Length: 282
Image (cartoon, rainbow, N blue to C red):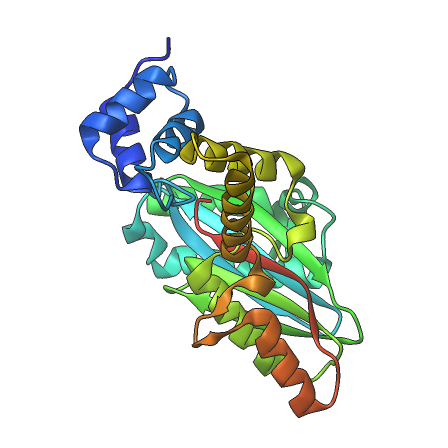
């Protein structure tokens, strides 16, 4: 069996809010599998809400940039927040995001081998190593994303906590409604949906939720159990699907209803095509 460490118990405690003793017990019964331990606590009704991640294990910075054709995202990681706040590190990330926007690489592997635009005698990866030597701390380019814009879409970008969390929303139906797209991006930053709509939720995720729901209502008549389970699945969908979440600035409406109001105001049907929510170290 996998060794149960104090860090594992603390992470389970932070993600579920359940006491340390019960967390250790759940991990032992689940043979050290964190997700199974969470399911065990939920089946017992002890973990109502579960955080998606444990403690942050990496520091760094996420930056975005855009032109008329594309929008790009870059995440760079460091070991400590002290270095993440360093001007030399920030300058490095700004250079990287500028070059990603200019060259629009197909992948991170392709990008790091490009000549650095300010000194073509070295590659981006060699530039990174020079910054590592200067700051005395490991630096990694974790991921890049090049988003090709659509002519009938608007794009909202929201950066939170100085670049530790960045959200991008593509709003379909108009090219001049970046403000509405940013409002939705701010909501996503706060509410952290996993999916855009119920159709995107994988079957195995729904099956897992149904199994947990049924385990919580054992002993009741079958017709009542089915109704309760259906209600719990609906509540789950409302929690994890963006369009069904209550709008964070006005919980009397869902995001879908908020968009209906916006569509009437601008005279065009608006819909969310997709979103990206990047958290440092995620």
